[in-house]
Image 1 (cartoon, one colour):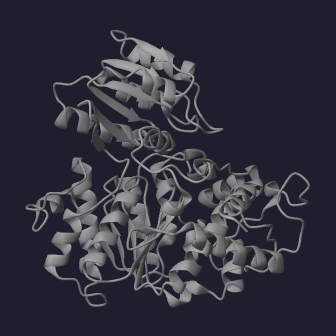
Image 2 (cartoon, one colour; image 1 turned 120 degrees about the horizontal axis):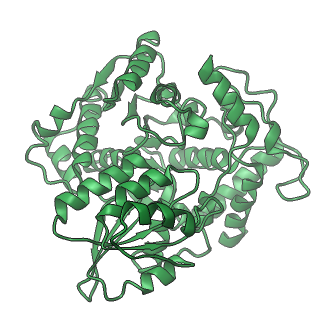
Image 3 (spheres, one colour; image 1 turned 30 degrees about the horizontal axis):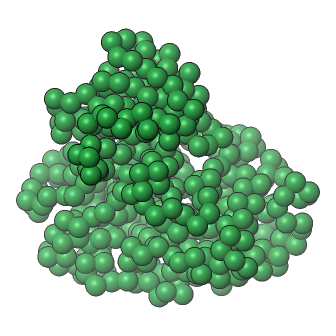
Length: 466
């Protein structure tokens, strides 16, 4: 098997869709020898700030001398970004080895035709199960994310990681990552995103995120929305999980009052406060010095989140995923704070299943020019859809539609300040086009694509209603 073969195998797994439930992951992990039982985890969920918080935790514990695994999604350019040890991405050869092994396990556990148009499997009839349900019945072929989750577990166990920073995909309760029992559970915040799958209220979204809370396991949260916090508090109480609520006041307490975070944005101070509360909660199990905390927080690297790049021409480009309303509000606040006298050229591309009208309303008024482009995704919102909202939100500026991000960026050659935002997929493509990240050996950004089947959505919705 070559690396291209391995990536193609992972691409083919998308045929099985995206399903919510733990049965497949429990079964596949068992076939793999339950590597999660040999590892220690910090499980991180939340609407925004998950990745940044993971990066902060990883940096602190690595500064303490630990071998730290980190599992995050989506990747910006290359698949290997998802699975890292001490911030080194899994190599292509290691991906090949893991895919080869996992393929054998899939043939053992699911002896049916492989993925593809002739497969007898159907993503639409999956039976969604809650934690504790039997993992031995009603199981269809594992999905891409389920397979990659177990690949990561095997990799971290093989590398003998001292600690794994473990980010959820979407939600938490029925997310494949929820088969682990962590040292501590972290819920960064609860905001609106993925309402089609997680529910239309903050309470329903919180219910899904709070699903990572385990009996007796401490939980840390920076959630400040009252209706969401009540759900988290209730879940923690029912599961006898000690709850630490981090307030905004913690952002200005020592040592955060004297640490210069490399990541822009006031929200990163809140992520750092949640991170610090997590580290302190685990001090009896994992000692960390004040020096390691300072060193770790001062060396965080998390690309594509309010990342400022200065090109040889002097042009400044701000890259920010800003993929939901909360993210758009954070970007807007950052533009006002760090670039108060600038009206950037806004290169905007958004997925259609996001709250793109509200995102356009938030960002368009801050721009001096607006360039709209499709995202390289089946779920992209078309530029003409965005154009109508942007023109209403900022009628004074020119709104231009482009067929591709490459064409839009070419039009910014003479602009002094450019902001690329609206989707992490778009930011990943920009990083490749701007040569800020090495190009992947194959087209790997498409592995981020997913689509939840209708039965999974219905099952999740009915569980929330109950």
